[in-house]
Length: 350
Image (tube, rainbow, N blue to C red; front, side, top):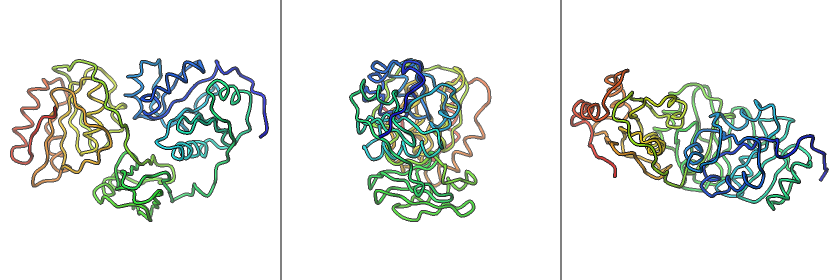
């Protein structure tokens, strides 16, 4: 193991955090205390609710970790907590594979390791190891794991949902799921019990670079969010169609009084995020939820289970009556329910 001297103090560096588990476990707060980073940035999208509940002073660029790290002018390290030690290391390798020769210092809480990807150990890595008590190791990215037009999603647990760009495309049947693309077609090669509707949604979204897509397996978050803000009685209504992971980018202002969401998993994610902000959801679903987050909805939420029509078709119909301006959420919900009629079974989640 070769040692290299660092040219910056640990306290001047940026800590990039990824995933909700590192916040929910308390490890994000612990790392912030023992490492005293200059700034804390939250990469990706789905960790934001957990990060906000942690009360840490964080910034939310809302972009993938490799993209974020490449944009930073100040040296940084990445901290993550995978669902297993193996999945944590796999995640670090994926990020490092997109950073080229710059390498990556990866703090992986799932296995208590400081991993220097594609770089030698330096004084910074040693100091992080000393302050955390984590072991220190060097690893290289395996180029065979990253081929254009192909994708192997590693570290899966059989039976758990598999996502591509936020859409559930099936459930894992082994610890690896292999996918390839032919034009606009996404073709499962092995390890996947296919969800046809999910594959169709993914293909409708347009051409896909499967080698660089956001892929994951397992639940997005295992913990329920803590309710926070009071519900706004009136405001604008967001329409979210099968892209719940984009919600934070869509909520730019404080003038949102509710969300109309289409799709079981999208509705779950919108409910999860909305409950933290006191934003109710009118979810249009067909009843095939993959349980990717624990159910939680803000008061005033409604679930409409499509009957004799797909949630996609019913969602398109409802989208046509969503006004652009300010509305009363309660009055708007009444209007949607009358408009839907007997095409859905209406319920109000507790």
